Length: 142
Length: 191
Image (cartoon, rainbow over all chains, first blue to last red; front, top):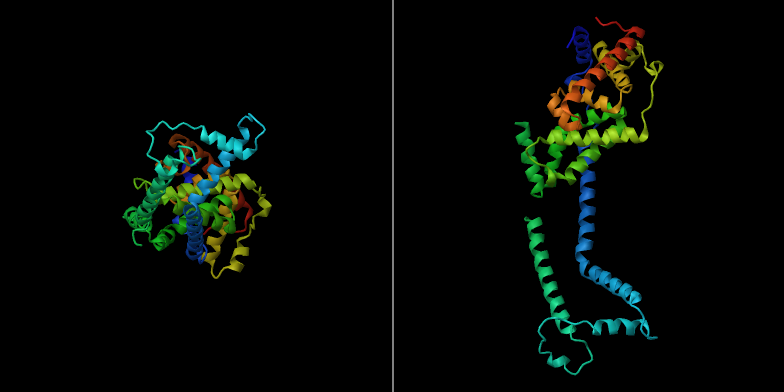
C-alpha cells in the first residue's frame, strides 16, 4: 500500500468497524423462526399429501398413459376405443413361464393378468414397508 | 470455538430439534442483517433479505458441509440474495445534496454529541456505499465491518482472491473520495 492508500484505509477504518455494525431489528429471531415453522408445516403437509396419495396418483398417471396410448393405436377396424384398448392388452405376450391359473382357465381375461395382479400386490407391500422404514428413519423421535 | 458451537446447533436441528436453529439466528443475525443493509441500503429490505437467507439456510442445512464455517456459508447466501435484489430493482442514484450534511441535524436527533457523531458517520458511510456498485458494497462491508480476510471474502463472494484486492483498492478509493468530499461540505469538524 502506498501512502494515499494507507490514508484511505485509515479513514475508512475510522468510519467502519465492528462497533458500527447495524443490529437486526427487534423480534428478528422470533419472526424468522415463525417463518421457518410455517415453511416446515406446509412442507410436511405437502409431502404427506403426495406420500399419502402416491398410489392413486401413480394409478391416475398410468391410466392417463394408457388412454393416450389407446388413442394413438392405429384403428384396424371400426371398433370403439374400449375394444381397441382391450385388444391391445390381450395381444401382449408375457415371456415368463405360464402360471397354473386354474381359476382363470375358463375366463376371458388375458394371461398377463395372472402376473400383473401378484406383481402389483408385491410392489404395494414393499412400498408400504419402505414407507414405514423411512418414516421411522426421518423421525427417530416418533 | 464459535465454529464448534455452530456445529452443535446444526446437529441438533438435523436431529429434529428445529428450535435449535433460533440459536444460530441469534448468533449471526446482526452480521447477516448488516451485510444485507449495507448492500441494499434499506432496513426493511435488509430484514427481508436476512430472514430469507436464514430460511434458505434452514432448507439446505442437510447439504451444509461442516468443513467450512456456518457464517461463511450464511454470508454467501446473504451476499448473493442482496446483490441479486439490488440488480433486479436497480440502484437508486443519490446526489450529494440528498445527504443531510449538517452534523447539527444529527445532534438534534441524538441524546449526546458522541451519538450524533456516530449517527452522522453511519449516514455518511451509507451514503458513500450507495454510490458504489453492489459487489463493491459487499466487499467493503465484509472487509471493514466484519474484518474478514480476503480468502474468506473470496469464498463468500465467489470472486477470485486476486480480483478481490483490485476491487477493494478501487472501492476504497471511491469510498474515501466520497467521504472526503462530503466532509468538506459539512459544518461538522472532527475534534
